[in-house]
Image (cartoon, rainbow, N blue to C red; front, side, top):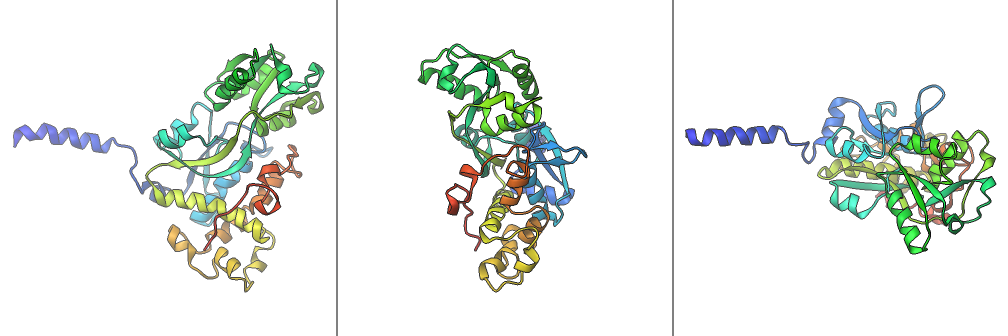
Length: 339
């Protein structure tokens, strides 16, 4: 028996040091009483503290919607600002329960990093921001230019691919910090700044002394489906996060808003009754109250409401819906059937 003792002790030590196993995220969040959500360090429109110090943005709204679904209270969220280098590791290690931080859904991240991307909440593409005085009209005019780019992102690889495919001499100036890369561009260290088009719009609107002095070039050199992510191995948590976002889109499709949700709950339409928890018992399959979707719509709003106040026409960014319009209006936003 003695010869097995060290082996048993070693196995015990291995087990207690393993990361959270399948099924534990959902239970941990409920037991803790608060959702821990990884967000951007400060990107206006997507994830940043407002003038009152309250976190706001399109990505932040997803976090609040998930909290509403779990707890019936959108305020039960603790936001953890993460850099591009920190974000995936923070999720993998269990530092955060959910990553909602303009992160591109790619094959290597989805299949090789122990992560699951739940739903795309913003369809984007990489572009270039330049000073208007530079006189550049399109991306191919940047031959020989210096380009500020944040390292540790898909942006860096896309830039190299674009230069190689078009035989352009682009000189990347790689910078680790998002804030430093923006500062370097604004100070004139680089001829152009490359990032997701949404990020460039946020930088132009929020960080330029005079936004009209800068132009976002028309080309998009990549596909950047920005999506929320969770860890692999907890299907219940994955399902809840995924269907929370689908509920936001479904609500817009059905014309349900934070203002009219109570009136809509009185409808005889079976689709609305299922969505709003009047009938159907959809919450049971997710492990939450049947009013889960009603709560998130009432407290956060549908996808269109979130889009408009954070990045759309009611915001400083003034972004058109484009690909992020509903599928029925020419866009790509499409909720899986809630039935």
